[in-house]
Amino acid sequence: MRDLNDKRLAFRKIGFGQCGLVFQRPGRDFVVKIARPGFHDALWSDFVAHFHVYQAFRAQLPRHVCRVPKVYSYRNKDSAWWGDHRRLFREPHDSFPMPSMALITERIMPLPRIARQALVAKYCPASLRRAVLAHPSNRDCLARVYLGRRRQENAPLAPNFSLRNFNLCLDRMMDILLPVHEYAAAMGEALAVMHWAANVDGYDVEFVLGCEADLAYREDDQIDLGLTSEQVVALTPHADTDVMALDTMKPARLEERRPSTRMWVLDFNLCSRWEERTAWEQPEALIRHLVLAFYENDPYYPLPLVEGGEALWNAFCDNYLRKSREILEADGKDERLANLPQFFITSCILREEQKLEAGLGHGHRDLKG
Image (tube, rainbow, N blue to C red):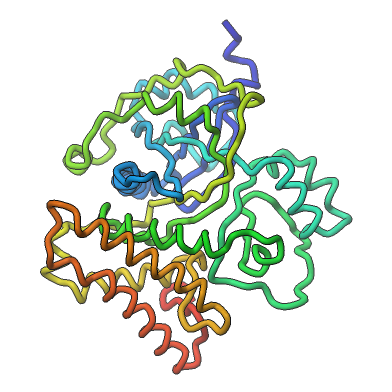
């Protein structure tokens, strides 16, 4: 048995967000998001919304192009899990006390080395390339898919270049011949599933490119949280879901994997979920809220009324409406929901028209500026 004091077994920080830090243990296919002080409830909201979205995606056939990380477990700060794992968090985080609340989900694998090297060669200042490629943090490369943003023409290369959470703006994607219309279609489908299958608003979610290891999906499908959506809703906040014994998982032999690059949707801590009856009892209020959530996100989605961007917007809309119709025509869905997806799209276009007439520009955000 390997020595648990071996640093190679310890958790390593690979990311951070508004509500927590994200850690990964070498050779494992899961990540642990640890709540910051004051953000325990936000992490619980992340867990609940993430679970409902994952369940909704899982029910779609054929399997959705966009992936959602599997939800493995939620551990509260008093969980026995911390007794076994606290010593594996070696990095100092003085303002970040542990134990804390922890959300354990499937890891989105970073983009492969060849993709990272290509991004560095094209977008990193020459004087920084060697250091960037050598820095360990740049191995944790996920690329944000910003279909709603272009860089300024002739903008200089970033002097603080980093591959972690790399912003892949539309002009960059077109420059390197990525399938942007397929990405727009996948986002439209994903948002439809969130709205009409999961009843989640999608507020502040992220769409990224990362890898899926084929072996992980074959092996991990046998591990399930074992709860229904109704049971998760009924849980007491911060209940310990003692399901997954992570130490029993065999370390992945990553060198044997054939990673596939996929689009993923993640980070649900600011999402809200509504009871389905709200959609027919207060349709105007719900659609106003969904339009707000659409525009307050970072610029992942394509935007309406953009010169030269009609095909991208149409790919998004057509697939949003098609998937919404498919979901809402299923048994058990109330017929009063049928017109709401078109109401949402029409309202997004109307809002953009109003903001442009007011001189506020494309994709104006009322709350975030």
